[in-house]
Length: 272
Image 1 (cartoon, one colour):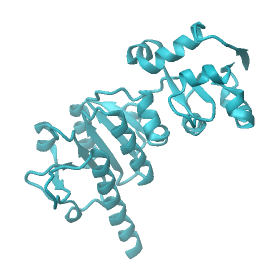
Image 2 (cartoon, helix red, strand yellow):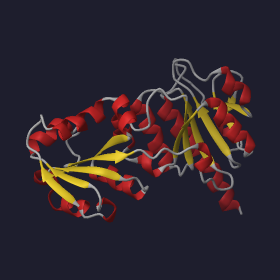
Image 3 (cartoon, rainbow, N blue to C red):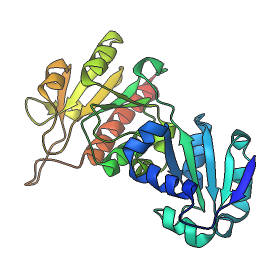
Image 4 (tube, one colour):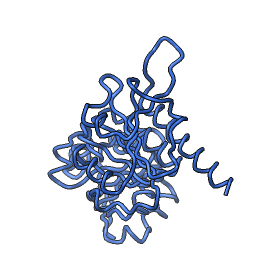
């Protein structure tokens, strides 16, 4: 474990940290992304990611920061300490326990997913807002979903805003980026039913069996799903809209549909 201290915002290592936070191109080129917060970083380490550099502010992190720096998976990481004033120039949130880390990419592919019998999967097509993606990941984690697949993503998986919004769920739920065509072929080959959330030609979500292997597919709030997914679906489902508006936030919709699957599965287990 190598430890050094930086005190200037013009330090090349500090400037690169900011670059990785702000530019997806820099993240792709360097194969690195930034994780902010002790809880998020712990989830990241538990998922087997490799930390290249840990930036720590002793004034904020205190004893907890020292304990984190001693984590076995940080043995080969460089440890860089910085004063509070400098740390706050890099941190996006107030309560991040004084730690930031540069982490190496580890991208899953569809074939890497280890799925159980009758898996529960969330598929998002072209959803771009990091806050929505992060919220869906949190719901997927809470509902015990086995994977989240981002199809034709407009935001990279390691966008700092997505990681923050997910509170680390991007590391606790297997998350994959793939094309819609690849994902449909993957689901069909494994006999996982495709349920598309849409208003047209659809049944209430609670009338559809979600106890078997199920992929819940959602698109953007403005345009919905493309015809490719509508045609590939085994069933079209909708959340009844009783007011004057015709759509819910995608993260809210995901939570409702995921917990219907949980309800059905738990009810089936209780009856056995």
